[in-house]
Length: 408
Ligand code: PLP
Image (tube, rainbow, N blue to C red):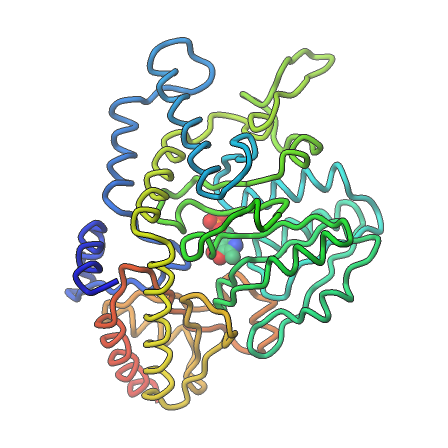
């Protein structure tokens, strides 16, 4: 993408024109949440202004309109993920809820005492704790794929973790701390050779790399709307039909029932079985607007441009900032730059950058076991999106130099 295209994209994201502390905002916290293009915000407003009514239950015009919009959104998400069927798309509040749903319901149906779940050492807490809760509930064991110093999964060790008690493998597609793009196709291939299903946490992947869940043969795939330029409060659990039919509901109430009596309740079909209560039908329709936006821009182009930004920022950081050290140097990496400078605490750098108008994240990034593995207090994380520019990276490097001068 050329600078004119980027400038035109930036105009679609009004927040990028904001100032903080009288300085131009530079937003490098895209792994935490992305900014929203105008079309997404307008779709939310349109929903509330024109089609707002509770879905599925109403015979009246507006309710049918809202129901149709929500169900069309399901189809659009299915197409985006290349899922075989729209029924395989469950709307949730986000990736966290999607993983909790999968862990609970799968655990109820298929796990028992002595069974094992495999996660990796680079998981976000959202892909650790729900499995840990399952392990506690059912007296099971959580096993962990180790990472190497570069922040890549130890695939030889992974093979050694699989056995007849392994019930599920849950790994991130892309690490939110390291940016590592994991070899999920290889993981799924090995797991399936042992008849073990795999859940891929795609929270950090989908905004950056094209995903085809059918080709990948993922059993479950999860993501959050807000990390892919969509609204917050809506996310997705993709599950293969055979699994979704075989596992019990996660929450009760609303449209997830078929019939309720005090003696016995029967459950609705998928996907409704998993969408208890009023779904975020405004969020789901706005999410589709975000998916359309990135499809129109082109994920391949986005990926190539973000990679250019990452390479540029990495080069300047290592060349110009004394004692800079990058955490996460995997061969296959998305646009996340986690680093430390000498012994300076990441929080201090983050605070000073903030005062210069630059938003980065500092700390453990909800991946404490990984931070402990590196024996560090956390990192400073700059995560790029396709609306960021090399000029912003120039300002960031200059600001870092100033921050380091103040702190040493
Ligand atoms: N998984 C990964 C890899 C993440 O980076 C995050 C959020 O940072 C999540 C899961 C949880 O996403 P959410 O808080 O939107 O549910």
